Length: 108
Image 1 (cartoon, rainbow, N blue to C red):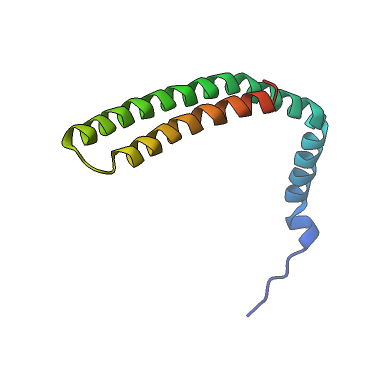
Image 2: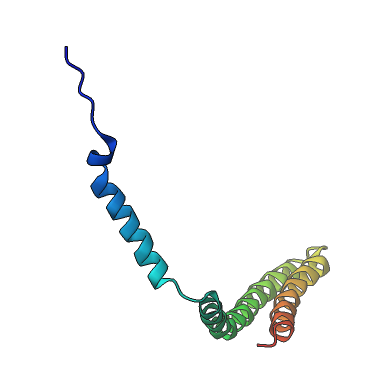
């Protein structure tokens, strides 16, 4: 049986050339990191107002659901109505405060 010995340089010459060309094309197209960071900052700031409004809307929906649940408990005469009302009210206030604080903290 004859063993076939291949020459590494001859067999992988095309692969080496391809790798070098890819690396050169990446190096040529590389941009300054500051431009990418500034673009990302601008995009995040543009979404922040919409996110804040979404948090306010979620707070309003949670408030309405909580008001209905508290009203039902109150009408049925359940003793823990005050505790449930405080929990629902607290969650609504928390959503509104978080949205407002984040907005003022980041200066958006």
